[in-house]
Image 1: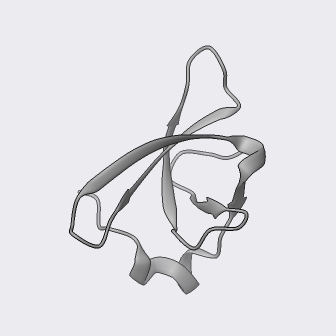
Image 2: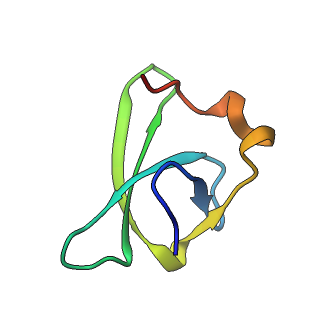
Length: 67
């Protein structure tokens, strides 16, 4: 199970996302957020089984900076 603040990505995707929460009724649904190429903040929901934990140091340049 993932924790808030961890960096994840889809198994076959390249986009690194930050875990921001979980769907209340279905804890296996992970809410994520990232910044796209145009600078838009995108929020999405994925099943936990679709995501992999990533090395934060290796991918920190791909994430947006949260306040």
